[in-house]
Image (cartoon, rainbow, N blue to C red):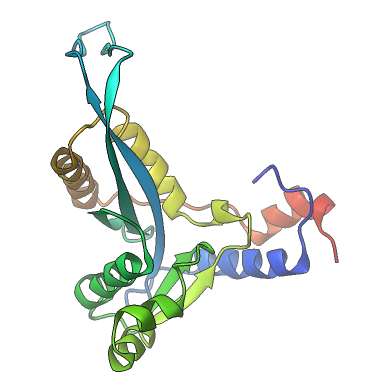
Length: 219
């Protein structure tokens, strides 16, 4: 956020649109769902680590073995305290399209519209659905979605980043060398947070943006 050198009118337009969206009250029929993804490298210890003990952190040998990478999709509904996470082999258009389809059909089947917040990754657009499903199927899914895109270089406005940072600290901070272990750890973490209905309290407003960022506004 603080690396921005110039905030254009297009940047402000998208920023204001998201800040207005985040200021609205919770509406079960029109849920706000933030989606993002991250890559996780699978790293296996060559030598056995020393486990965490009271007063002493876990210790790892500097030598390790790479076991490939996995992509992690995360969708979080900040006001409801719900999230859906899926580990995939890759993050191509087909993977994104299937993740969103399942989100719409299973998690938000009763909603009238899902307000989907995304960054500008090339997979995050309607074309992904038409390249993956039949036109009839793609049309059906897209009718259920209102897309809200962050400004370019403005991914800090996507609350999914907050949730992913929490997952990094609380779940993925240690070495994980096996994909099945990764999936199990993430499932346990997300189930616990869903059970406790962990929400995200967004407090940054349009007024805050104008106060903090107006020196960078350009026509």
